[in-house]
Length: 377
Ligand SMILES: *Cc1c(COP(=O)(O)O)cnc(C)c1O
Image (tube, rainbow, N blue to C red):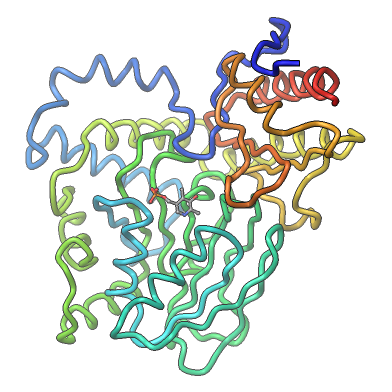
């Protein structure tokens, strides 16, 4: 049976087939509106009001969306979450960091800290794929690194200050790249909540956005004045100073800014973070319940409390090759449901970010029912 030649019945095809974990679905309404706005926006100076207004729209919109506490700043710059790891190594870690490591992305930040010759070797607390570890206070650690949703495995962890830590001694930095905008959070529980716009914020990649607490901003000022060499692109002080002026240190992708601003406005109109978290949780519950009810599928994350409500990983029983399932989906226009390659499991991975229509998630499970039967070997 050639999986790629299986044709799905029309009623099982989602209207929009984008279920990727990033880049992820960009709402077509937003793209159409961008096209209409383009003549006065794209190809114009990022130091002039048209583009600065978009940076302002993002900063104001996120302040509302996250109900940011007084003193927290929305800081943005080029390079995405991956750049932010290096920026954090230079501007937020004083001597030693501790990392909850439970997948590809959390590993990368720990590696960036380990590679920095001016820092002590980081503390790494890891756990098996499909679970998350618990960080606790460690003497001498001045930054704790959490990952709100480990996109490689579909595990989510709560954002809370690790037990025994005091906000005046240690910062908490949270990689929220796939979580931000879809999972509930209290920004007061951390000092740096950072992400890229190509996941819940329905835009394109290339930018980082960080919600920085007063303590984080003070740490940035102290470390950038300490004599440590900080490359300008990694200097969060420069990023904060430019953000305060509604611009970025160097030239941004203007379309990315616009699409992000549009998505934030849309999310706020729907009911903000409370709406988005409820919407994502309902779509994820539909997928997990579907998997649990099937004899040949199951949620990869065994503990329901650790299951992400934005990135859902579903194990497929050996009787069906998950690669055949994702090939057949792809041939029918349903894209990017492949498992994270390095995890090496017979698995599919489905993102249910706010832009994804709940009716499309229901059509997707209908399509999966059809394919799991058709592709049984
Ligand atoms: C996607 C992702 C990243 C990488 O984001 P970039 O924008 O490619 O730098 C980092 N962390 C997590 C948790 C992610 O999901």
